[in-house]
Amino acid sequence: MNSELQQGANAKVNASLSWSNDALTVRAFANNLFDRKTYGYGLDLRGAGFPYNFLVPSAPRTYGVSLRYSF
Image (cartoon, rainbow, N blue to C red; front, top):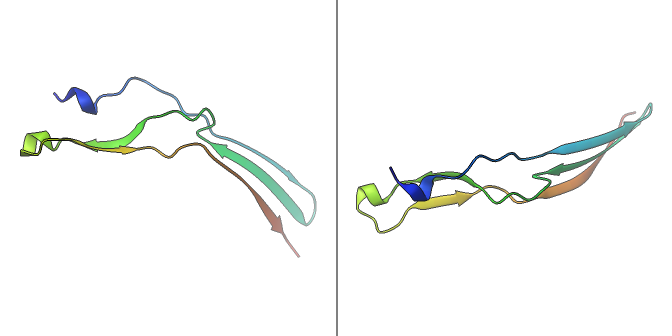
């Protein structure tokens, strides 16, 4: 088993908050709120003869606001 492809247990926290009235909805969101550094996936390339593994990090903390107007 390739130890470089293992990571400990983890939890990621996403949050959103919205407010709306008859025509307008405002939503704020945050993904990976505590900015956990983890890998999304990895490939064992050493088993295929390459001198390294391929590790892809997960997305960092992202946040934003959305507005929706209905008429």
